[in-house]
Image (cartoon, rainbow, N blue to C red; front, side):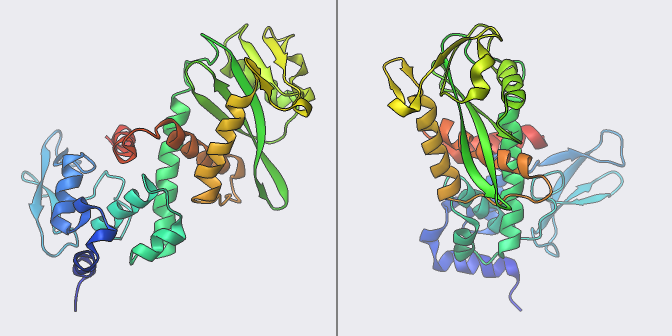
Length: 303
């Protein structure tokens, strides 16, 4: 019987143009993972205080490697403490799914066409990557304010629907730094919007919004508030919200058009924010090597 690993290797050899070079075989995939520190070549043994575990060959395992402590002989899988630890797919499949997620930005159904992996397995990995990227994007907000060196534009947009209900997202765009911070909203009342804005935007900053009534108290909160009435378009010159409107257009293309948004019944607001944060991440790194950016984020969270 041909093993799953061999089937994937054979498929890659037959269809080499559909995959990236570094995941063409198990050996090259392992080398790529170690090179990018997505798996560590040595880790501390959980049984021996401070003693190192090393990779050793084990052909009985799908990865053909395992971690073993030379002192107490405790063993762990090659994937121990990595993002791949809880997944049963081959390392080649897992890496290829990473590439399809970023930078290719393909949907789960489209990725399924290129791999022997099932929809659920791909979906689970997509969800894990989405959560990690979102947590990273949220961490960038800690201890910072937008609007420190220039004006910000603020707007809400309808991102999707869930059980017939509208699901809105608030965006704050800094004209100088070009940063976009987003927040999923339970509603669009002033009681929801104003605390988010006062937390995110520097005191006294110049703020542009549309005429939505929930923004009316921004002046009372100490901001220099300018209103752009959309009945006359999105404004012109500096008196405009064109920046945030452009962000919405790009963000929806990167999220809804390419991968779609599947809202989680158990935590719809946080789940929606994860999709949006990934779109923001793609937008802000559109000229960067997205797979390297993803690797750096994974390393930050796992090692």
